[in-house]
Length: 533
Image (cartoon, rainbow, N blue to C red):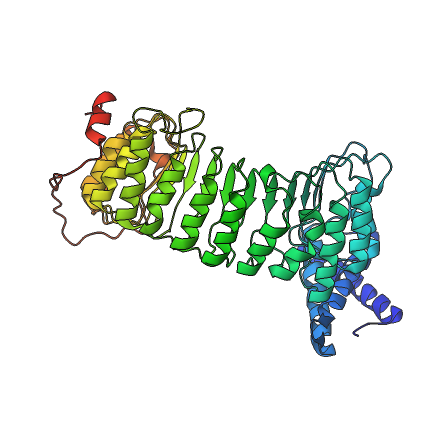
């Protein structure tokens, strides 16, 4: 096991003092010898702890030379940091014990520190102090070993009666697997005794199925969890199954965050089964998790158990058009839906048309949803359909959906589709109906002068507009000038996003294209009722 003697470490501290003073002088920073001495001792302790952790691996120990080099690099980084910050090492002046009785939120987020029992006692002092009433904790970026976890468990127990929100994301970085799992078990057991714990964040820990099961005490315990985050934790099919099996009472869940995992269809099926037992679900994020058509349908079917959904994010999953009918049927029963993110879901023009058409028919212009239990009007505020190959025909269905929600829609993301001028012109008619748009993103849609100017004219009079993004299109120089002129005349130049990546067409002569006949999905009728025909 890599280590240094006390004499060697003291020698390093003395050298660090000299280095801090010399570097401070060279940079014109005033740091006294006393401050440099205190900082040197603190940063050597942090570096030594980090090196000791790095020396251990799952299969044994690293070569001494590698660990020594890592120790030296960490020392160098911290010396530069302490000089840049005028002699203050992060966390050194926080006085964590002061006012513990009044502190409600303890947030340890900051530099990556490998905590020992001693340093854990220091940073967790607000929890351990008499009369502590901390109700929210965030341990992120601090890596806990066994000894530090024991201190953390004692600290959590001290405030268990008050604790409502526990963020223990990213707390086992750099630890060997056996130690990491033990840390999770210790922390989980401590949190299981918090009778008011409603929010738990386990994100950014390398969990997998073993890690999920290591958290069994809190997941399967009596904590009345309403919010659970397992983002970027390697949530495979088996880990999803473990989550579904262990969660004691999913009927309480209102928020489930599962971004950036590798769940696939099989994992999504397990989550869908859990959602079927969670009728109060309000906020589901299962983005970037390799979910295909079968998994998407399972999720939609699971969400049919309730009608409380406010936010749904299934972005960056290859759902395809196969999911559209099931998704549309489910969404039509969610009167409280405010944010829908289906960016990069491979719906294609047919899938987008199916989805938008079904939603318009379900509630659209009538403002009511067929079959909705409480007959409450659905009012979308955010709509994301980027990267779905939306063509000019599908744009009509999207436009109809936009008009149906014109009073409430603020954020619209349709970037990197295939709208072209005809699609942009159709959308412009719908955008003109928006009451208070904040952001409209049409980047990368093969739009030329006619479509870009039509969109600008539709939005430039909206006082609420903060961003109109039209970069990476094919607007001529003359078109760019006209576009800027429209926005400037309305006093909205600041809202026009950058146009540095515009791909100008060789042909400067751009002519308006006639809109094709065909189903406009009720768009004309809705616009007529809005006085925009």
